[in-house]
Amino acid sequence: MCPEPGPRDLFLVIIINGRRAAIQHADEYERWRVAAERLAASEKCDVKVLPMSGSEMMNFLGIEPAPPQPIANLDPAFREQAVKNCMDVLRECNGSYDREVALDLLGHLGVMQ
Image (cartoon, rainbow, N blue to C red; front, top):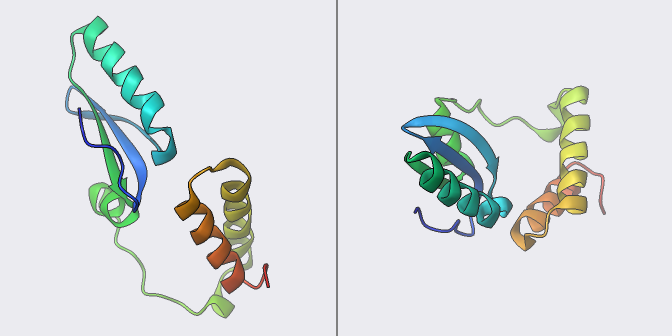
């Protein structure tokens, strides 16, 4: 089995027999580790649960980040979705690091003072 997520890991990549099967949030590591062990035993297949940071995930998926832009130049729909995502993290996530990052971003977006 793969190592537990570190403090900067945000994602889990679930790989079954060498093929990506799912991408999940790192907070659900224990649930997916147990499910992977059960699946591997019952179906006689190889299952991996790989923790990844945001930059590792982008590299894994072949995503090239765009150059940074000032927050004032954000597309309004993108800003609205970013605020919604951060609020979802605050409501649903127990990880202190994730909540801290969400609060910081909301501050930069002018939502939190």
